[in-house]
Amino acid sequence: QARTALDELVRHYEPALKKYIRVVWRMKSQDVEDTLQNFLAEKMVREKLIEHADMRRGRFRSYLKTVLDNYIRSQLRRNAAAKRAPDRAIKHPELIDAAMDQDSYAPQDTFDIEWARSLLEHAINNTYAECLGEDEQTAWDIFSGRFLQPILSQKPPASYRDLMSRFSFTSPSQVSNAIIRVKKRFRRHLEESIATYAMDDVELEEEINDLIKILSSGYR
Image (cartoon, rainbow, N blue to C red; front, side, top):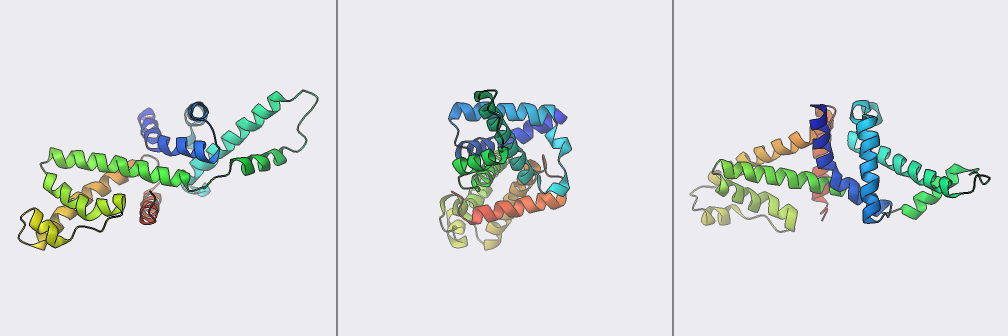
């Protein structure tokens, strides 16, 4: 069960972690892959990062990013020290930290944007599959036109009148009911994904609110 939870967590966060390492720490693709796999093996598996996460340190997403930064910084310092002659010890390691921060700086919202993108993609795919399985293609199309497309394509939402005409509905309530049904499924899939790492219902709700903020800001 613990391994399944870890696999779920990695699946949701891997795209965000990869892009964060590449953009913020300016690593090449192969170095990104090696760094991420080593980080997962050492911190997630051997040190059981999930079990040791402390709510007093803040939300898990922020905690994960902090642990990753510290891990990469430690590895870079270790690599730099290994390349130096034994008689040339580093006297002020804090200066190396500062130099690394300057050299590797990039917009810090990269991680959160990729987290939102991955979470949204997962929820969309699962909701769509569920709608198809329950013969709700029409409801999905309405939800997509009214709710998803404005987020994904920055398009204005389809009007109730246009949706009624397109699907031969006779009242706005039919459109509204279809949106409500799919929206509940979509929300459930979002919550299930976040619940793989959220410590409690409060953090779950905070993560959803963060997701809404990121989507509202035009994250693409």
